[in-house]
Amino acid sequence: MKYDIKNIKLAPGGKKRIEWAGKDMPVLNQIKEEFAKRKPFAGKKMSACLHVTAETANLARTLKAGGADLLLCASNPLSTQDDVAASLVKDYGISVFAIKGEKRDSYYKHLRAAMDHKPEITMDDGADLISLLHSDYKKWAPKILGSMEETTTGVIRLRALEKAGKLLLPVIAVNDAKTKNMFDNRYGTGQSTLDGIIRATDMLIAGKNVVIAGYGWCGRGMAMRARGMGAKVIITEIDEIKALEAAMDGFQVMPMKEAAKIGDLFCTLTGNIHILRTEHFKVMKSGAVVCNSGHFDVEIDIPALTKMAQKINKNVRNFVDEYVIKGKSIYLLAQGRLINLAAAEGHPASVMDMSFSTQALASEYAVKNSKHLEKKVYKVPEEIEIKVAKLKLKSMGITIDQLTGEQKKYLVSWNMGT
Ligand code: ADE
Image 1: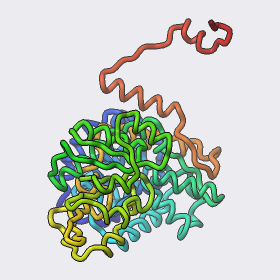
Image 2: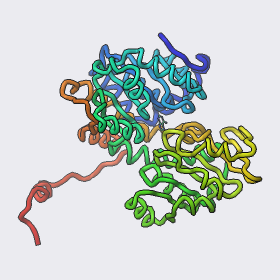
Image 3: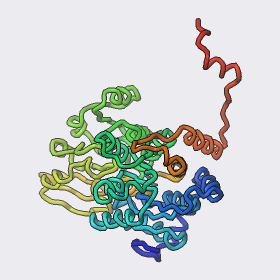
Image 4: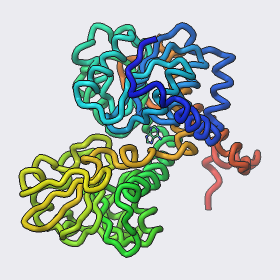
């Protein structure tokens, strides 16, 4: 078996973490049992480019139980949990190509290994693997039955490919499923982003001006949790509706240029480039902490920050770099990469349970329906979402009401009015 990981000797610690996370993933565990019987991926090669975490390890075990010959590589150079990678190789016989802190060359070498595996099914978190396929591995595209995409940024890239008429294979936008974004993006990001910030800085959130750029599901989640910890939350937005929503949710809304002057902590969650840039760094208070929880490290203009700084003190604390600008200090966390996965452990297993169950079932659907799927970006079928939601509710011991016969009739009638 081929692999490239930090150290195989880290496996025992990784195994414990994989098992611990698995305890909080009841829906995925049930799907794993179903897959072990149905073997939907029997004889199929699969490459997954995901954050290599304990939760992903449980997805990998599920896909393997379904018969997949799986290779896993990292979807971010800083998010790999090296002990988990070691255990996947040693204890579960899964090829892993991922090392925490790897440089760009190594990251792309690992993506190439994932393509050289000759996958018939792929999975992405940010579309880097599919993007590589669309540049250097185009010839392989017809062999791919379907590709799953886990995150907002990846779906944006794939829709851009589709719009340009250049998408070479069918894609399922797992991110867009309600069982993914309403829970993972909101409650997962909300909690894990603050977890990463606190682990990196040990700062007190209560009483701080916390500036959150972007009020999508991730921004909403973080705003909700930061308020819960006593922060004075300020939202910046470019979308009128989201800005209104933030205002009516009780947050202050203002342009970044204003927020930059008063923020103690800044976090970008927009999926766009250079949200924090020179004009903002110029007016920030000394001691301001800036970080990003969007997929790519482009949301903070780090080259501009570097250019402005007279001095950079790297690693004043783990994951914290100090930029000294005209005597004031700005602290950048995790080199502007995903703070929740770099400095903490990503979203808790309980929420990844839903995302990865949706991933697993979407992959089975893509294989089963590959003959009918065109080179388009598809939604996750509703039956899958309902199955995941039902199983999650069951695992939480929650039962809900059913429509009565009279109510069902009422919902399809038009003649009963005032
Ligand atoms: N994305 C966010 N949190 C994650 C986790 N714990 N595992 C995999 N991908 C993630």
